Amino acid sequence: MKFEIEGKVGISAPTTAQIGRAVKALRSYGPSSYASLTDANGSYVQIAGGGVTCMVEHFDATTRTRSRAFHDKPNPVFPDGTILAFRAGNISMRSDEWFMSTQVIDIFSAFLNNASFPAYVHWRPAPGF
Image (tube, rainbow, N blue to C red):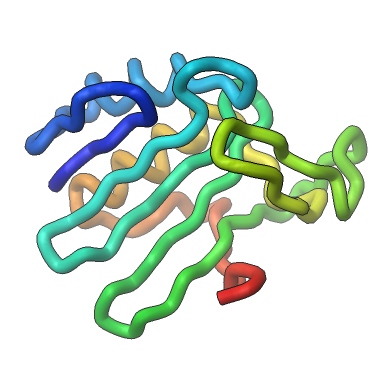
């Protein structure tokens, strides 16, 4: 596995603790606003944003599909179409696609350990892919 964080040196064999610290430090307005965790086959999970405004995507190298994470509790503060602005660009989000960094750590940890994603995470095709 390789863990890459914007503006930092990548980690070739990350631990759950290293991923947790890095994800907690991400901010959409800061020097590090996105990160990815890639396995040997080229599949990955990636995060954009930080804190309570995180977007998560998953790419499956076997099926060549990219999916966006969502959950069952739409966020009334961020209605459909709200823009996640971060250093790599702007992404239009749906109200059920906003995650907290603690949830992202759970998602990345599951991917790291080749385990099932948390039950509250669902996947839909990523826009534009």
